[in-house]
Image: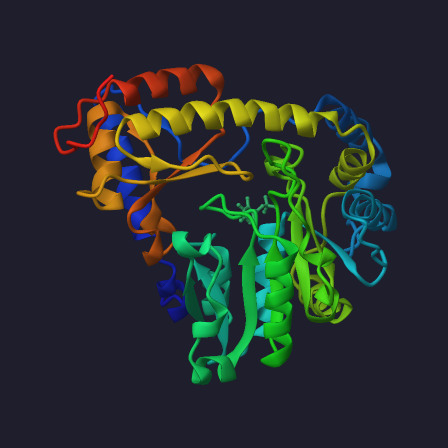
Length: 395
Ligand SMILES: *Cc1c(COP(=O)(O)O)cnc(C)c1O
């Protein structure tokens, strides 16, 4: 058997290496506590699960769903955008439910990219934008996100020949992995840029409801002209602790939504209907869990940031997202820092280079560790006698 060449492009070298180290440690009977995965530890709120259970008992929900989703779900998504962002969407043409936003992000590349074409992709980033570009036969052109630019891409420094072949600009704020946020002024600049160079914009915004210190992230669709050139991907995963149920949405430009619907209707048969009813409950029912969860993450954020700064990292508390993006001490690479930390303390963080070359010099810590593990991890971190790090502050 000979597998496709495109499979060869999927090379998770870094994570293979980290997982091997974790497995070795565990095999020696040593404990490993991971700040790795960005998957909420808190449960899905009870009202949502109750709806899921009752909907699962309805035989009508045992059959194939429609791939464009229940009209009531599309209406609930539009109503949520209206209430949260004052953005008015047509539920029939500007809203498409997804089997998690990852699915829609991946398939969107097949709507926009032909062989040899380019997608402008942030670096570091959630890997799906670049990988799906490659799977569709295109090439990602990486836009470094630098701390001195607030982790926003520098749109003015992209070579002309790249722009001629580019079809789409991917953006993600609040950002994974850097925790950076963007305002409407940035989105409006991106929209003007997209118009000038005939690009589509895909904004990925699953962390708009995970925010701290009273900060309220904006939606890309609030920016002037947003829906003329782009869509926003959103998700119930991080907002309602529903990562396991797989439900998200694409909203915005009707042409792009229709294209995605056409690709998807040939590949999947939609979201199981009981989950769609649970999603309607999540979007339309009580919203108190969101603020409650953000309070919990905020407390964890503050603890994590303090300890990281104590051990010689340079960590700034993010205004939103589930991640602390910390600069490692100057004499370290991301990988060496993460490897030493894991080896010597059993605490795992993700090297920034796992999200792209511009992640060098940083590590990402997720705030989704339960409180008992968090306390244990923080005490291991603060007690770390790192032989390679003279920058550790004394206390
Ligand atoms: C978690 C995450 C997603 C995917 O969410 P699902 O809806 O669960 O597929 C998409 N983008 C980013 C940046 C994420 O961190």
